[in-house]
Length: 171
Image (cartoon, rainbow, N blue to C red):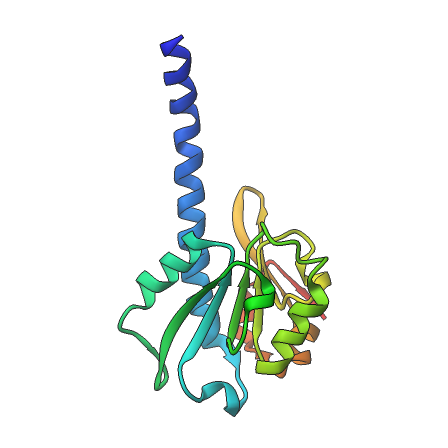
């Protein structure tokens, strides 16, 4: 019986490592995305706030990688939220795949419109529900898709360099 538990542990260990690496990559990408976005002047005042809804791992990695760094003249601040209801005053709203983006899309879009927020998600079909950037797994690799109209709706623009790196671009 102990051998079976040990075997199960050994088989699931790589999966935990992959999930941790995936969160780290999403954090790195998120921090890089902000440099390839055309932001309105109002977004470049005060702290640059990245709100993360229900993904502590991604929030911790963003916090770790942005510690002591600035976006332009703005300090990067990471806030964690349990739900979309709590989100306010963020330039970036990262929505976990554990949040039902479809059921909360109207609220999410309202929050994004209030602060010209970039919505980044990690759920299949999230660009159909307001996300401007969505992480997806394609061919066993982490990729991202862009939705120009969703970005434009909240007053943001993608640079051509960002569009050149995307797996898919929806107009």
